[in-house]
Image (cartoon, rainbow, N blue to C red; front, side, top):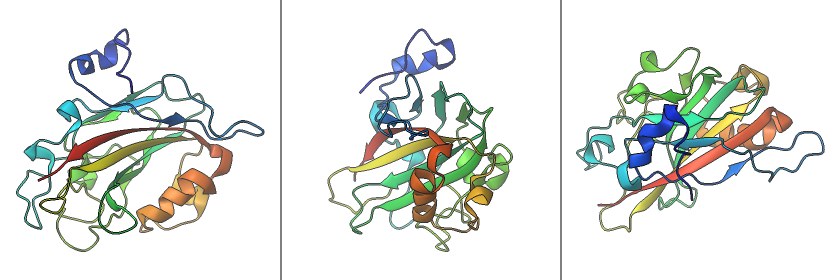
Length: 214
């Protein structure tokens, strides 16, 4: 686990925050190695201090009383040829057998280096042409609208759950159009497309994990 290089001034503010930077992998390009490392491509959040969620960022539904504000995210050193990004957030420990999807954003523009705090709470707050994808909170009303951020709300008494934030960099301008799938596709379908379906147009991905329990 690493922190962002402190010499990089745009992310220097994160040096005072413990941010987990986990696996960074490059997709295969031609005969390349799918497990090759993409040096420096990194994702983090200055809001998730100590790699956990303050009440401001937890769900306000299903027995939880948080603010449900999406945390600020920052990234750096995207690979050459990047034409867009996608973000997905998965509860790895949900008692479902398949995890639980909390947030998804697709077609984030290549010029972006992050998402502002609260960007996931309304479609109009995302940088064009990005759009919020469906999550496992579909049609519950818990997020104020489908495609919006849903903060953590694990069952009471569970050990703290791990919430994995994964950022994908890809070489197509519109991943939905390239894959021929609807905007309303599930997070699982998009995850398949991003990890496998677009082949060598997946240029890199990077993840970090934050935890929350109650």
